[in-house]
Length: 130
Image (cartoon, rainbow, N blue to C red):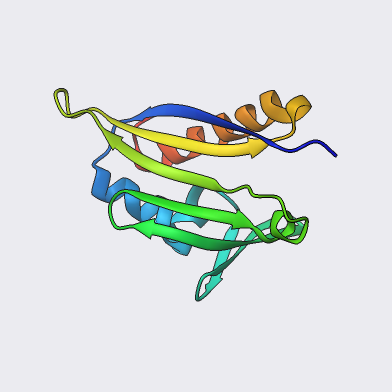
């Protein structure tokens, strides 16, 4: 099987970086927009959607700035992949963006980007920045 390909997308968000960080780094924040429910035990996060669940390990986080996860299923397949949610603030305009870094197989990149667009659309609604 071919390796997954890294891609990055940027979403302008009208919210403070501090507020946004709560929604990308905590189980309660993530369950508002990313999945139906999120449980964490230490560095292991369980994301629940309808009748499926996926586990991800928290690889790193920098307070107020970014979080990086790796799906356990990818780790089991020894794929060197991750997904990162990073807050970027323009130094001049102070505009806030959410940068998403993720990996997908070549024929699934468009689908993966669309999924992120839907998820971030939900996040914007929760934040009141839609």
